[in-house]
Image 1 (spheres, helix red, strand yellow):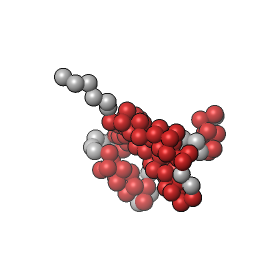
Image 2: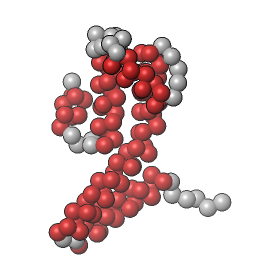
Image 3: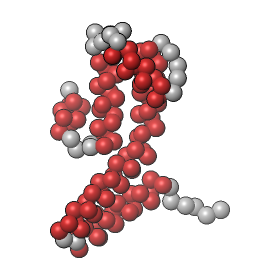
Image 4: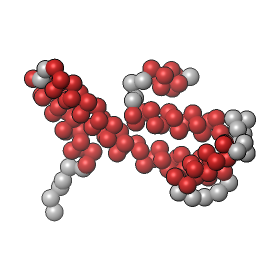
Length: 123
C-alpha cells in the first residue's frame, strides 16, 4: 500500500506553492487572481480541518434548543421558522449563545483574521 497525502495536505501544498513561489513572480491582475485562489484554498483547508466538528456542534446545539433531532439543514430551517413566527426570540435560553458560537465557527473557517472575531475571542 502506498501512503498518499491527505486532501488537506494536498490543498495546503498547492496553497503554499501559490503563495511562496507563484505570487512573487506575478503582477497585476494575475497576482490578484493568485491571491484569490490562495485565499479560497485557505477556506477549503480550514473547512476540511474544522468544518465537520463545527457542523456537528451546531447540530447538537440545535437539537437541545429545539427539542427535536434531525439533519443540520432541517434543524436550521425549523429554527428560522420558529424565529419568524415568534415562537423563539433572543430571550429564549441558549439562542443568543447558539447564534454567537455558530457565527464564530463560520468566521473562523471563512475569515480567521477578521478583527471582530479576534475581539469576540478575546472576551
